[in-house]
Image (cartoon, rainbow over all chains, first blue to last red; front, side, top):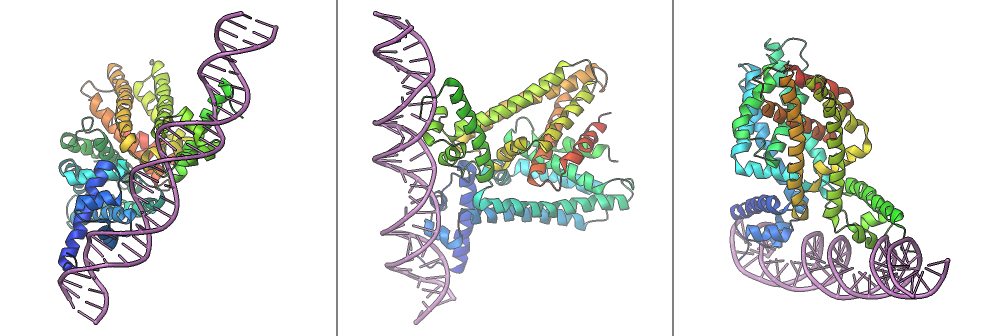
Length: 203
Length: 203
DNA sequence: TTATACATACATTCACGTATGTTTGTATAA
DNA sequence: TTATACAAACATACGTGAATGTATGTATAA
């Protein structure tokens, strides 16, 4: 039973990626074999090697997916640039956090990225990729602050770079701590107040 | 050439731990074999297995060391509890960040913990341990805020729990981002301003 | 017909845990 | 005090399993 249609092939590819996320989440990237992934996807390693070069390739693909969804969301928000940029940015932060707090797949993604992965060997290049993608995210955030200054929502002497860095660290820390210990940082309840706390003194 | 004295034995044990940190930092915990560590320490796997149960045991030991040094520092600061608690806490944060920005061994420690380790399998229990230890750290931080309220440095309606959580996330994010991309978050220069930025909101 | 989309089979490597060997500090009894 | 027994502190050797990448087989969509 082979030679599926192109559509079917794309489907098994997607199944492999979905299965990989699940296996990575449960066993960790380092301890997951391609056999594990294949089994979870209902195929053999042959199929996995047909669609992907190796484990790192699969992991890269997963990472790209998440990054894209976040970039798209940010650009969508940015597109409506008539409103108060600070409010837009604050809403964007809260929405993102609530998304992570709600969407189980997102949680699995970030848990894998933060805690179930050793960024060494083949995966070391991903750190470089992540830095580039973070720079992209960072640049967009900076844009919000710059527009806020132009809108005179922030004072002229506000430092967009500094603000972006601090916000970036704050957000990353929240996501990380939430995933590590949801009972300590209950994002569903605290996302709003936590973000407000950051933006409070800026206005 | 065997049966060293007790003192010598403790020394090789320390050598193994030092070598392990180095190997973990370069190759990642998941991709480091006990042979790698033994070779770096100038011994054989026999010595490693004599002093430690397995790789996870070594990693646990390393983690405990770092945690202890931080707890000690916090308790030392806390002991001088005559001063302004907020100022103490702020100084503590800046000092810790500068320490990490300066001490290469610390950087290797945290780089391994954040990016060179898959917390799965045998290492999964470390997440639980870390949570307990974080709770300890968290409790001490909370104490600072509570004393600040008692000192009337903070208003009575300030929420120590909330403040501790946000500070904890902020600090963790800074360390993580610094290690991932030192050029983006230059801790040596930004540690002071970043911490000030947080505490400014409180006063 | 041919390349696609896999499944199956194979060879190799590597790391792990354990078992065993060896030497010598060290405690104890005579 | 010294001889002796024991166990500490490793090194070496062994067996095993597991995962990897590739090579090959095969049925079918295009």
